[in-house]
Image 1 (cartoon, rainbow, N blue to C red):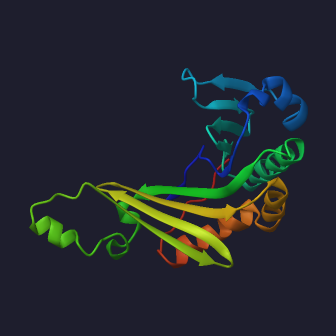
Image 2: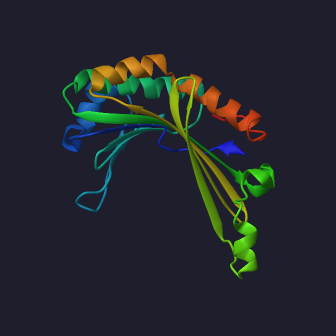
Length: 207
């Protein structure tokens, strides 16, 4: 099982004005000296994305996502620095929450059956149902952090989606929280849960 590349590691929920995030503005204030690519959705309310060689900034509705191109600690630090710059340059943007997400992908052989089998599986199958896909979700508190753990499995694939969720009132609170909850530390906690709770061996990050 390995960490999914190009996923929305940091998501800030707020009233974002995507018109601010022009190539010129991002180049001047957020990613100076970087070669940037700007992408617009063909839909009127679709996603707006701007990318460097290391990260993508995506605004889709109320969500601003910072997406590492590769999963490594150096780029996670860039993600954090970028989020703090956005908070500094756009301090009055109304926000309500943010999440740090890690999505791991593998196959059903990576996990013992007891962790992904619902109690009603046998009953459904005896009724004549063929189970194509199953999902379950835990919302837990661990180390004073709110964590949502979603497990999705079908006949071949397995996904563990771990979301650390934080309610915030403004971007000052966001900065306080992200200082105290480094992405690399949250990743270590996510890996510890996967290793020790679900007994899954993880592949090393590349890049």
